[in-house]
Length: 486
Ligand SMILES: *Cc1c(COP(=O)(O)O)cnc(C)c1O
Image 1: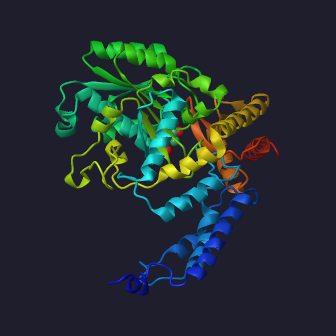
Image 2: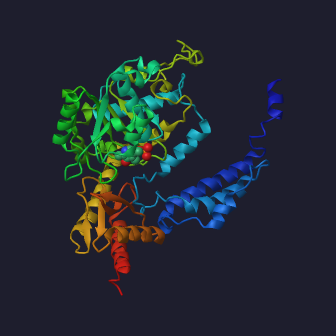
Image 3: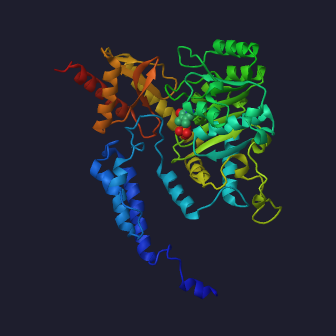
């Protein structure tokens, strides 16, 4: 077939009418720009009505449908009923807000459709560039390795896998952890995210090897208790091998004393991992970076660009000091992944040598655009601003007789409650009422066994006025449910 014939038989999956498609594409782009521009005029969240849920269900579509109609379905039946984390009133869990720039970069990456598992291509170079930036940001050696993964849950798992190879040697990849005669144990504070415990499960160790170290009153790890536990474990025949510190716990944003943990890890020959899902990117602001002192001593750091870094989901990352150990923990000898000196199969090592994914998307591009466009200073400033907004809320809560601040505000998370009888039930109801109002979306958590309403200021759009609204709403619904207004 010559070129002309190729052109005469285009793929039916490409547009038959490129001009029409182009127009439709611009409508879709404009709709999303409008969505972000007008985000404040929307409810943060609203539950999808049953009719909307039902209307989505069809049998597997055998025939196609026009793009404009599908886009309308998206606009009317999907977009209005998302979680709402782009909205400045969203304060639940730990969700990033995203940016227009990140959205546009996603479009570019989608069009290019690069498979960034490896090979000789610039998209791999972009991922390496971000690894170099992160090594510099965290004070790691310039030859540290890094790789994008879905999120910190996965990055924590990679850290456990790598620590496993350090503990048991390369043979563990053939023999499995069950072959060891050691009785390995690991440590992290009681406030550590559940994904770390799950990582020990998935890595074959079982969750029980993770020792949950008690907390100090400020929700950070109790250093004395940690040292006592390590010594007791040693005396009882266990083999301590890994210690995880938190750079921002999920409940309260508490930052463990990373420098002290680094020293304890060194003294005890432990792999020192940092879960910095939320807080590690705050290295970009000098006033926040000082709280992370010691992070440069870590063996590995897991964190998310999609939370405080404002990169669209998903963009998790792990940075590893010992690149060779990192590679040895994952690299596969498969023949079809053969490397060459020249040609498209050159440029080894590849990202697929540093994690379990072979085919993988171009997460690095939206991250590269975000950091290049805004600069680390502006991103750091937006994180610092979130902390100021959180302090503003904390101060109002602390000085109001009907409200109680449930934990110190180390970073950007405020845990509060309406003080009343049956406080757990009432505060849970308050949180739901506020969510249903569409005005703000806090979540809840347990602090020292008591239910707290939790406002995590992660969105770069959230301002003092937004948390003032939350504050008023807690008082309003608290009064409503306790009958104080009647
Ligand atoms: C969010 C979070 C995680 C999990 O990260 P994902 O990106 O959701 O997988 C782990 N640890 C902490 C402290 C978190 O805040």
